[in-house]
Image 1 (tube, rainbow, N blue to C red):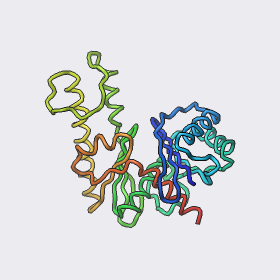
Image 2: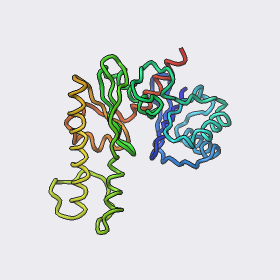
Image 3: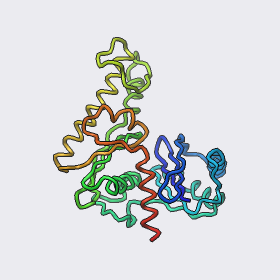
Image 4: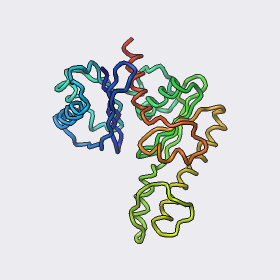
Length: 254
């Protein structure tokens, strides 16, 4: 079995594959100071709940945008699984040319997403990842990663309103029942939700002028919440990053 770990700034998503089948996945809060033993205990607990033997894991692939977590994750993999993990790096030969400058500035998760999108939906393609930041990644018709757009995530926007406006409360990000809010909370939720949907559609319309015929797939923790309000998104795949790591593992072991 293959274990994949996508370590983001806010959440870490863990998945276990048996060949091409995703057996289990879990979404955890990213803790930058988590030790190797804490990782090991946590994973063993989750595996026990999922009735998976740690001894059944034969490979571990990690995509991380949080460099401080790397040593603890490597030590965990060696100590608890006896496996040297593969850390995905944009400068590796992953079967996709990277036309970003410099290539190492691209987050590993963005390349992973691009590979999965191209494999499953064809090229050209655009991936919208709703995470701490919202990223838009463009893959050309030739299957090359050509760049993208980075915008503040909707969670960051909501927190900024609370922190910078003394009379505004902290609100849950959700689709409001109507656009015109009849309360402060309703007005804020409407501005965040519909304003963000407008941002996403506006960026995608402009990207499509430079990347004609691109298929748009969304992913990330808030993809299922925001995507239905966006006219330019074709489909949602919440486990796109995990699937990309599985594909990369398959390519590299050949």
